[in-house]
Image (cartoon, rainbow, N blue to C red; front, side, top):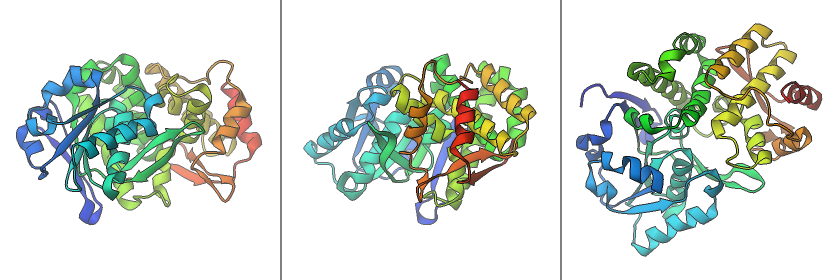
Length: 358
């Protein structure tokens, strides 16, 4: 099929392709390249009714595991449902799961595939902008715990990621905007020119101009693939992808999973991180305002939820995976287009940033 963009996540013998294009789920040859005998497709009722007919490879649709929709169902109970289906239907180690949904479905399917019979293959077919540009790429899989987001999981790479931009037409405005938070993040941490391009072309992006959509997905995936190829298990530079996530995960946890979308929480999170960076003298007020203004274009929150307890927020951060040697590790912007990792930020600075966004 013409006009399919292909990016390779380079991980030696576990390298895999990301295919990006319009209506590519109808391309039988694309899915036919995967040499697997037994598939099970994991999705939810909404995605099944909206998009399952777009997949023309019937062998992928033969076995279906339908999970409940939403962040609050990203738990062990849902994982057990996947295990039970696979065991009852005698799925072996040469089987393959297909994640057909947003970040929640992708994370859970990946975790189930990482742990079922000590590891089977899986494919990501993301259906939200956020999952297309972030969670479907890189092999982070997992579930939530009542005390923290994504605290139980594994690194397990997919064998392929298939991104069909036509699916975005059914995405709500709120979900689309939440995905834009991750897109904007890539510009802040790694590519100043990309940030400028998003700012200049924000109207076309909001109108979902096909070429603009392809560009934001392709460039986001290129940046993530480059970083993951250098640091698969987040020993160093992959942590830069967590800009806004330490604060954002705390917001989700304290507020209650599902009240804010993940993208909304991390948008507010990296604006708070930008405020911390101003205090740390690595960002100017003008750069902060450029980020804030762009978030507002996409109706993303620039203030913390009303009446949220900032002491509880800080305490929730202490349960985060980014704590090392009893010190909180922060990802902060160094202007726009660069970023850095530090554990030398005081509680006082963080609390001041919280207050500024209350």
